[in-house]
Amino acid sequence: MKKFYAFAAAAAIAISANAQALYMTGASDNGPEEGGLPAQWAPSNPAEFEIVNGVYQITVNGLSQFKVSTAKSEVEGDWTDFNAGALTCNYGEEAGATVALTEGDANIMCPWTGDWTVVVAADLSTITMTTDTPKPTGGPELYLRGDMNSWDNIEGWMFEQVSDNVFKFVCGEDQKIQASETFKVADASWAKYNFGAGEEAEILLDLETEIFQGSNTNMTVGEEWNGVAWLCLDYEGAVMFVLSNDKEYVPEFLDSNAVETVAVENAPVYYYNLQGVRVENPVNGIYVKVVGEKAAKVLFNN
Image (cartoon, rainbow, N blue to C red):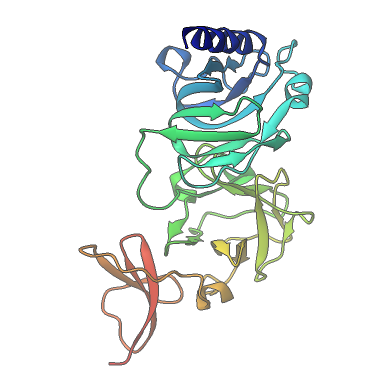
């Protein structure tokens, strides 16, 4: 029995010594002195996974998104070698899941920004992410970001969350997007949410359009816009977006089952009309009832 354990220990040491190196680079809110990455998006200066109990493991504080690769680049700023050995996945919304890795250089999004321990199987086939950082409450903070505001996450360009998965933005008098300007919908760190156009970059007014997470194609409008924008996450498997210069415009997806029905005890109750305007005392008609983070359409017949 002692010989068996000695042999197993020797084999484990041999595996560790001969294992393929695995690297990570990406975005972390923390600097290297606080447990973050050694540099942000630096293919020639990545963090390196350790081998722990026969798997690749690394813990990064403040991690929001990253890339992993079996190779690091020799030239600063050159992604060629790093991307050639890169692995990727669509990790999803929940911590602790084990997800298959495939060849590809797309960014891997953390379910939320936090202190993540990332474990990759010895054969590089799967990835698992765990954290003690609590999952944030409420929905994401989404912004219109583009040429019109220097691509910043400005509070005045932030969407209002109308329901669990429906967001609305109404331009102020001096807010507009010119026909020549490009823009996207994204969160503050360009991490979990970063929506761009498909093959056609131009968003036609008053037409519901599917937009895509992680797209590199910026959006444009064919004419000046200073009206209302609606966004619906996960609408029948798609992300729907619509712009209108009519600030009273109501998209079809708001009149669908896109608004989930969930009751939340002891949470404040708010009502909105179908134009997204909050109503203190609803009268006859259909309204959106928001309780906590969830919403449902209700009929008042006073």
